[in-house]
Image 1: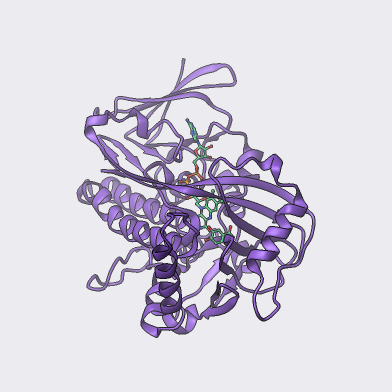
Image 2: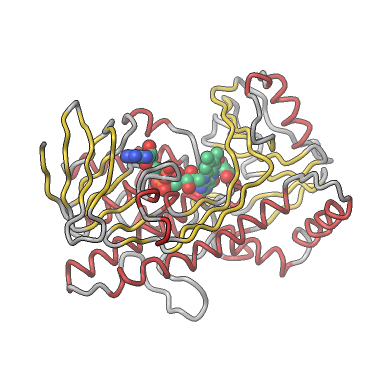
Length: 406
Ligand code: FAD
Ligand code: DHB
């Protein structure tokens, strides 16, 4: 068996694992990243698109934001289509902050490029990954790579292997608590070769259900439709998808998305999930491995970035001063932001989706809330503040703002 020694062993090369490896490198800390998928699969996987300003700042300040600054689409607001009436939420005017549309796969591509340039280890297509010795001072990661059994011995393990990874399930059940809620609907997402017909996102509540208009570039539109969790994609030929999107996004001003060839489609289930604490012995969980939000609030990727920023600071403190104060607080500190995002994502989801409870009271109450949120300055400000996200490295009012990477 080949044995390698490093300071931090990272499981998963999604945004969390790659950004953690990058931030640790910047702090002079060695790591090995192991990923079970192929490099091209990881780079091409279509997922999130909305980056909070804190995520953008983190990428720029840590030196991986050049292409993001050139190609990212900066948005000052978005619209909510309330049963045909378009109402704009002016994020910039309400909060002084904005969001950036830049595909998660582009973030991953930039981070893989940065990793390659450092020469530090990033192994794709590893198999049978297992972690052990989590309560010892030298935990390990075992796996198969190119037919050879390997072990990485490290000081710490970062479980950045997403919701379906092996790190969280390696923790004894009686050492963690899980909070979970599964929703009775899902999203059918498509990418279309069509120029976005609006420069900003449109979240739509229509009698037929939720729809979302987004984009990836000046030539590619990204769209989502509320559907059943077990929706059969073979029942959704492209013309049916477009009919439904045009119906649900339609509004009194006559605005509609441009139609074009659909190049990718998939169904994503919806779940709220948190594990507490986000640590077991010398293994720390970050990103989707520790928490999942329904995608309506566009928070998942941003939460993953905030977690690993915190973890990188805590590990840097450990190596620089020998203090574990930040490592000991890691889970509690992360969970503050996580629960704020959980509440917001649940609320955005309940606000915008059709839920067939069978009680007409629920849909009238939801409509009253949509009217309030799109007309009251106080309500819009609260929505905008949560949507643009709280700065990374600064949680809520009361704490002094620290600079990113301070
Ligand atoms: P992942 O991206 O899941 O990465 C985990 C990595 O670990 C993967 O590469 C996986 O292959 C690897 N892995 C798994 N198991 C193993 C193993 N055993 N060994 C080694 N490697 C393993 N978030 C937003 O912020 N904004 C949005 O607009 C947004 N929209 C979304 C839209 C959709 C349709 C979906 C599905 C998600 C969306 N999200 C959004 C959520 C966002 O994509 C996730 O929160 C984000 O990918 C989390 O990053 P991560 O690195 O924690 O996990
Ligand atoms: C996108 C995804 C989201 O979950 C969201 O809330 C907004 C935009 C997107 O993929 O562009």
